[in-house]
Image 1 (cartoon, one colour):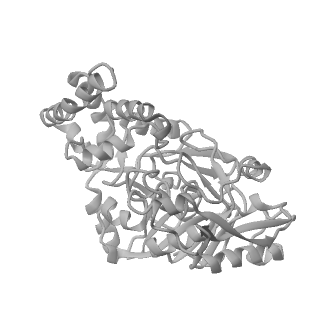
Image 2 (cartoon, rainbow, N blue to C red; image 1 turned 90 degrees about the vertical axis):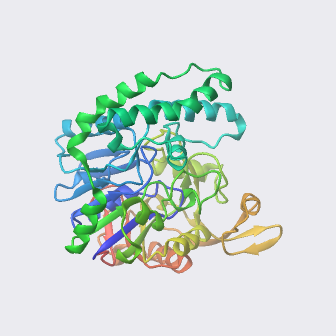
Length: 427
């Protein structure tokens, strides 16, 4: 039962799309198990660049079946637009499967998300404004709309009425907005039913049967470990569980079926949105990392906050996910620095701390303790093996591996599909 989980080991944007796509030729199914169109993956195939938001990265590999699991929240308009865009570029999307138990992002979820963020002002979380959080809130409150509800107008109408009873009170009385008409929402959602129907399936059954047949299934997390609703830098987090445990609940497979958990690490650190970030840079180095690394959010278009590599976070990701391997991305971006700082611990109230503090207040006040590693100036984008890397680049990778607590089994040395050094096979 070769089931693998691939997830972000920092705050997201680590390059999961490239890693998933590279494995796509060796796997039979690629499954998104949480999040929605608030996650963005960039995949470069030859001279073509693809920006994926809701679809699993395996959609670009013809031999692979891409799956949107029950733990994902789906905006039908975004999904259909993304499918249409890929079809226009000659990508076959007919093998996509969508769980009938996945929850639907409705227009009122997007409205509530945007007005709430504006209302919070300086206290805002920094959401993408795409309705993700309100959709998960409705799921927990048991007033959510699922994909399967699109095929029973009576049930759909009842559920929309129940959801809007409270939301319209909030919109009109608190936010001074117009009430949303039930009929209008129902009509829009029913308009997606026929177009989505060819993709809807019992994905839990499909995936478990595939594993019983010894098919290779890759579970792909959106966002990253530090954005997990339970294990991230709360409240500056997403609304779901990108960590490895989320793959089991978000796809409907048992934990005993997971054979490997791969964490994606960027060779430095970035994050989008508000929240603490101990190694964040506000100087020329930060600007250079942003420029060279092309650090702009695939989904949001926002500039990413940039900082040096944080080994404390990497160790934490290893622990909470049970990581068996790391895929280190964007090593090439660090070419040209004479010395490269790496955060090995924090200083909090004058004390050295080597593990991520559980206290939100402590983490907000954490100051990075750096160790300086020698840099390199040679171009590494054509390196095909670890020995092809300059000695200082090799030492940098070895140091990160030792500090992070799991072996680095692959290294990204450029944005292209073939610009990767594989040290140990993932499968």
